[in-house]
Image (cartoon, rainbow, N blue to C red; front, side):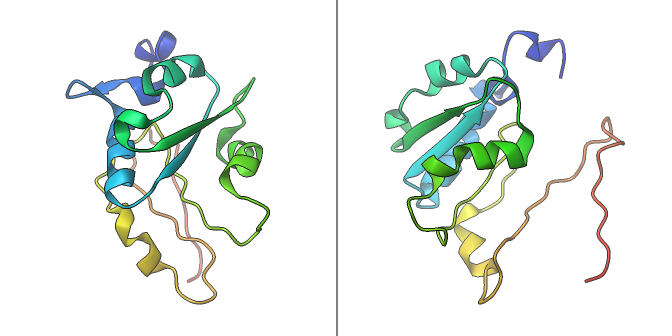
Length: 139
C-alpha cells in the first residue's frame, strides 16, 4: 500500500471517502457489539485521534498500543487484559483493520457450536499479493 501508508496507517486509508476502519466499526455496532479494542503500532496515534473514544459510533473504543508491530497473535496477547476480564472463557472477535469485507458479524455466534472454540472468516486474496495464501489440510 506504499506510498499511501508512508504517512497514514492502513485502517485510515479512505474507501469512498471514509476510513476503512469506520466500515468495520459501523458493522460491529449494527451487529450488537458495544466495546471495541483496537491494537495499533505504525502511526497508531492517528487512529486514536480520528476515532477517539468511539462515542460517535455508539461504541466504547479502547486502545492497545504496540511499540513495534506484534502481528495478529502478538497483538491479541498484548490486548488480552482489555479483551477479557478475569474469565478465560470470554469470547471476542478479531477483525483485521486493513481489509474490506461485507461479512455479517451478527451471524458469528451461529457458526460456533458446542465444543467449537474458534471460527475463521477469510476474504479473497488480492491478485497483487500472490505470496500470501492459506493452505488447508484435512477436514
